[in-house]
Length: 429
Image (cartoon, rainbow, N blue to C red):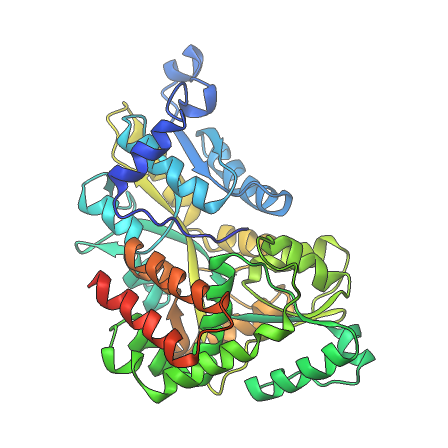
């Protein structure tokens, strides 16, 4: 699942741009309408817009759909390929006057912008019991104006380090647990003719790697100072210089074909033993499993090197558009009731390689990576929000640009890199 982030400063501009592409022309309810018989039966109808389109994702969502249908609902499916495209399409539909009843969205600043414009409604079935089951960081990010505006369905982790076991064994290397150890291992791998790090040369992938280094060098509190409080002292600190020096030291260990590469292509390099490491979110696991490999056996997974356990989370959630369609609220309530069910969340998370948004479930049946993630998430201090969703779109884009510019210009010093990042934040503020 590609995790590029839209960089539009407001949802109105986003709608205009999508409109120019002609999306709104004829884009109603996946090209279908409710039959006269169904309407006469007064069955709750719910159109669900989502980007769970890959084979494992679609299979996982099928249980949600089957539960809705089993409880008397009529499900209208509106799949959109890719998270960035899906978010843009949902906003376009909403502002264009053809809102989907329910739409997948990432909780954070973009959804809050929609709520501030009264384009989404509170969760139609607020459950104190279910709400208390969500981790605090998830519960807080899902609210606006004192109300829940989305149902978190699963939690994705961004700061994973995947490694090809056979490649490390061939060079007789242990799994590194610090960044100096990683750099030394990368030197030995490169000397042995291996690509140390599989990286896609896209700004969001470069940011993922940078944030792993930031967390690993600075720790959880420093990470929060940078991305939650935007502490100016953090951006001009010695720690930030150390972060950029370490980040720059990784450049020689990425192959020259990296620019423009998709994350899935980088994962393929890892799977086929062309590269030793990949720093990526847990959505990369699906490709490992589809290749017939076992996590923890042929492909290992550990959190990126850091002195403190931490999990950088992204949350797949579903929100509810404000709509005047008759009986729409009934369909939204039915969807909410199903999505909040612990069994549904467990099934979906297992199938897509994530962990359930609810923390009141067992780790039994989850892969080795997810089981570890669920244990880490039990500590509130270890829960960190992905800044690309936690920060306003304009600022998030400016940060991505600064990191990408530094990464792609070897002539820039660590001090210049820190200046680029500091200026990006200062200009936005």
